[in-house]
Image (cartoon, rainbow, N blue to C red; front, side, top):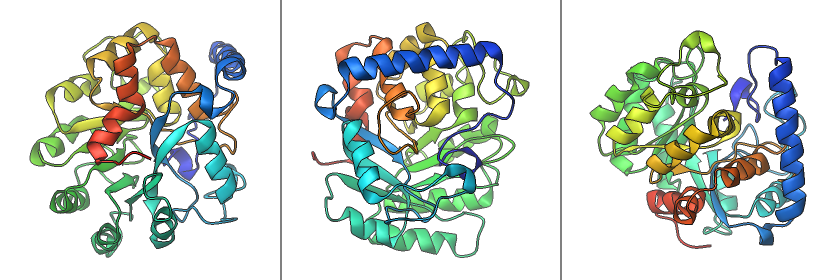
Length: 322
């Protein structure tokens, strides 16, 4: 789930003039390329979207309320389906699912799959998630709670993931959600058979060896290889990541030279994710469309690009073809 309990990540400081100009330029580029080469899904390579939400209750549910007033009106089912069609998603992982989501997804099980979630620091959380796993959820997450990333409740949740042999997706944002990222390697070591999927601002900021917490949640500029995230993806076979939200886009765009090397280096660990709240799946305000452009701009080897767009997710989640 995106920051501030909405479907779009928000920075915590005002955007600088330079960042505004950079963002505006990227938006213009995105729109131009979208119109030129990706106006329809048929013009795009198919992908598996490992990170989407529909509404506060886990969705999709028709005319559901928005998660927060800032999130704006929620998408209808038809709008949600259109968004995924326009980004060429052949399979989508619905996060934070409930029983309604599971039933909806069963209509097209190759196209829609579900992860389950309950706030880990609330009574009965484990039982609620286990019940949904028994009914067909194939993963746990996205976990986004005001707890330490290695607290007893997170350990208990990892034990559940181990028992059911499912991955566990975590939103890392120090000072807010799953705090204490610098210690997370201990969790990865404690549960070597659990596949953890990292995401969000602190996760992506720490690709940089020189990152300091006072650098903000969306640091800009050149990246020095060897940050915690960079090292841990190399060191731990059970740690993966998704490119979702604005933080994933920032990781791809702030230093393209580093990003290409990073993605190539960890080509078996990285998965496409949207975490986008727009209703169309096209245009410069769509996180997913911007992400596709950013990936294309890296000019990756086609085998690597295919892994990122769908191969890694299909393998990790044992997905059938749509």
